[in-house]
View 1: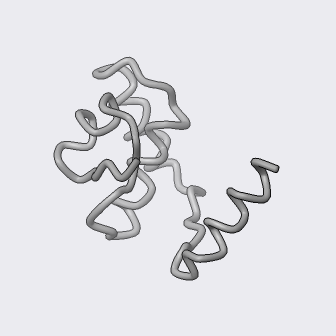
View 2 (view 1 turned 90 degrees about the vertical axis):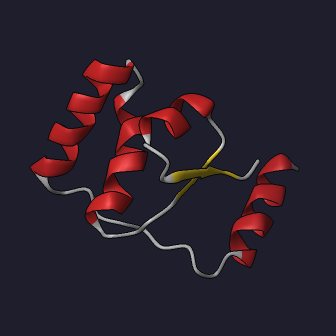
View 3 (view 1 turned 180 degrees about the vertical axis):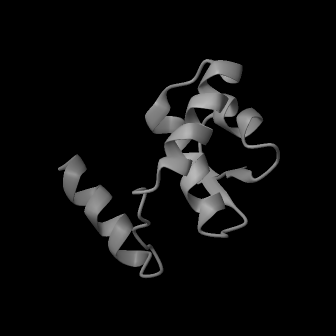
Length: 77
């Protein structure tokens, strides 16, 4: 089953961590990027949240998000 395959992949990445997006700063920056790039707010929160938590890379598979990330995103799929 496809779901089982995804669960197995995520189990292998024990370093995965959930990050909080409870600050209005996240949403304001995502809104600014949405106005500039026309991408969805959830996608842009995916970029903004790690930045505010001082992570230096995002792992994505979307050329539009890579462009909006200003070089901070890396395509892996």
